[in-house]
Length: 430
Image 1: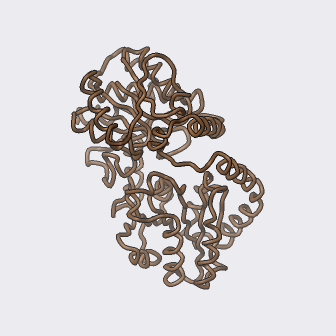
Image 2: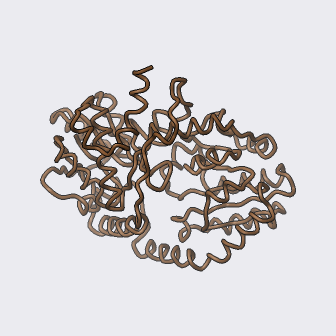
């Protein structure tokens, strides 16, 4: 088995150690100094080159050494897209990891891709699926996950920027600004987090008390989110802001409001709120458009009249709470029975008055299916979560390779085994 890039931090190192201790022969490819910081031992391979040479190098390494599986984090990273394509041509399973579609306490593990590249993207559960969500994988409580991730990211991106060679820089999956400017933006992020607490609270309180079910929520995504690439259908935050405000001003009920929620990791980097205010004033809806950069998105969603998103996983929250959902890009949940699927910018004009909510049974069955098919209990950053996620990864890989070893299954936590095998077992019994 071969590991490519993982989440920032030590999860892939721990996963490699766990897998090697349980009968696998796992090697890891390192692309830059950041990857080298969080890897150790002899079973590593260093790649230096461009995308074209990576395709040839990866194919030859797989063929010559007989690797039977690939594991990676983030199926939209350039080197990972190439690796998935090559592995598929050779018939080798690729386990793709991502942050949990439902958080906290979960991570995503799927064969072949995540989000819009997921093997179940745009689909509804098959007729034979009838497992309630409570029988799926259980969440793992992980305190301190965000602070652990932030610290690991600081180390990873600092070392990557300072020590990586010019050739390695060409394959960075995120082209960060200079260390000085990036540090400045994160200081500003934390400043705004605490400085805006009162303002965020008062806006949210006013919306909940005086405009319950009469405001629409628009979650903005991180500007360099890989889901804003090919999967976004040419949408980005700026276009989303412009089109949404113009359409809202012309078509939404006059007593309704519009709320933009800035992503917590974008709080110090973005100037989107200035653009929001300018476009709102231009369309004479300044008093009905609000911007938040903190607070509970789930709470706002539950009390909203609907959500508009490109392809954020927050769309699953709208499905869960039973509020109308407009999806503009390619998303895991893009299906006409679940959401208002925007094909063109003008389609959004109909959403304000024609949006629908899928029946409760359909929504809950869909979320239960996502739970079973895509999620595993654990975390990529907190220690106890990493241990659980590594065990889940081992069981998932054993399933993908057809290694239904009794001892391995018994060694995994019962909730992990249940989450991985319930659907398959019931299908066989049916």
